[in-house]
Image 1 (tube, rainbow, N blue to C red):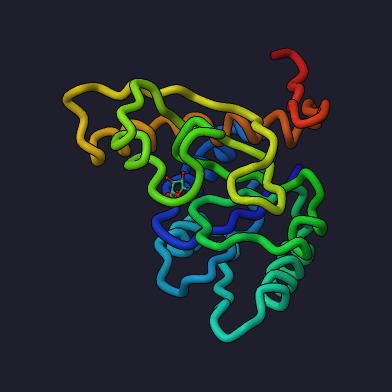
Image 2: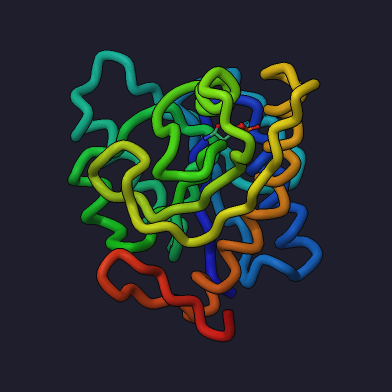
Length: 201
Ligand code: GRF
């Protein structure tokens, strides 16, 4: 069984979507460990409730490399094959990225390369985009800049507020994340330049 490590800083609804998909046999593996840099993160509670090891590691007062090395050690100890960032509010250092080459993914609430960075749903709404959505991408050393694995579009309605739009994007995220992870765990993806080629797609 392939093993996924999930990194969270907050609510953990995408973590929950991954856990639920794994339970239904739709992830192509299992969530083996959850790590958070925030002690009270709801994501840690969700992990504990699901019987998954939940580890808190404080990043404060540590150099980025030192913190990342600690997290990498935890992930290795749990024999993690793929790292999923799910609302993990820290940029990864090269130490981390190189420890899991092409083996770290993130979910972003916009159609990259549009609206990278924080508050992407609001960025799209304020810009007046008519379509936005969610993106799962491989993590490199930049900000939301790695190769795209999967995307789901969400229409922006004239009646939308940032909140109603963000809620529909979140629903798309929960469908998209497990769907994107599965071919990665099943070894059905390869890179051609920065294009992620998914077998049978
Ligand atoms: C999601 O919108 C995700 O796209 C972004 O952070 C948010 C995390 O939400 N990277 P949750 O913690 O998974 O509920």
